[in-house]
Image (cartoon, rainbow, N blue to C red; front, side, top):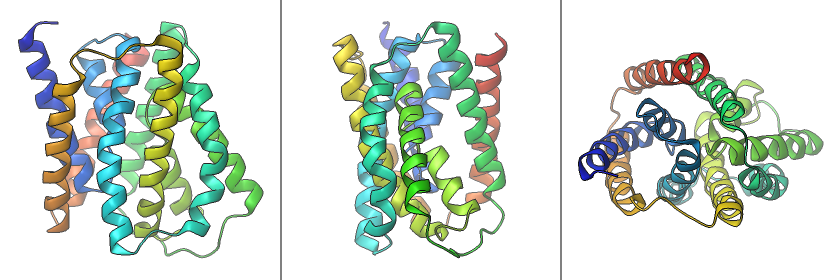
Length: 245
């Protein structure tokens, strides 16, 4: 791959990491959108997004746990079945068309989440039933492995819209959920492909610096609503490209 293309890819990853981490997300759907717009192959997109997710989600997990927002009682029922399901999803190799459709729908789902999350979310009103948390975790874990998204774009709105967590608690649970699912998903992917993209180190540096910068900006109350609107627009474009081209 030409160095100029890797540089362009890294610049996009840096910008996405800044934007996503400023609103408490790891950024997988953004990385996927950027790589899709640059027409990278699915075999490259999925492991790259999962690897970058691991780095940025680690930063977010550390911050939220340190801030005291993490709840083990809320977290474990979602993750216990998600981890093996993410491994299975990462191992499965979809056809190019099936991957594009599934990924396009995931990006549009993420866009809807960002578009709707600018409104004030209600406080947590109840804890999820154990069976519901286990089933949701397994389904989200499988989707995260299949698409390379980590699952946060599905778990966070689920927790908020059903009143199972307040916004900060939802973010604190979603970050380690994304981290563990991404680790499991990439292990499954490596078991099947036994390879990683050679330019991953450059993207790791870009995502790491971007995650630190974005977290800092987010902590100083950068306008989250404007960022979410911008991200929603990018995801709609990328999702539409996957579904209709």
